[in-house]
Length: 90
Image (cartoon, rainbow, N blue to C red; front, side, top):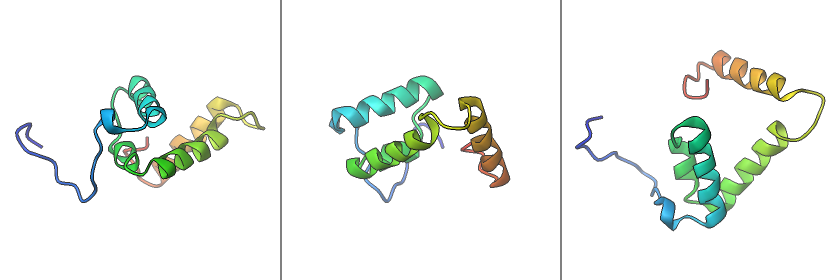
């Protein structure tokens, strides 16, 4: 998309400054790690409770101690994303 075009959206996309503090901090942490803010997170931030639930589920799967190492969990994510042809996720 050319820089002079406005992206189209069916969902309101909140500005970072308008987000609750915890949501904004989580998005900024993702940006620092990934180098960009995934659009899905910005749109999901329109509904902060659902945003928090999504990341709580993510953290339960990816951050808590269990039978798999962090590297093994990340490998499963990459393989699953590739199997689903999800270039965005890989």
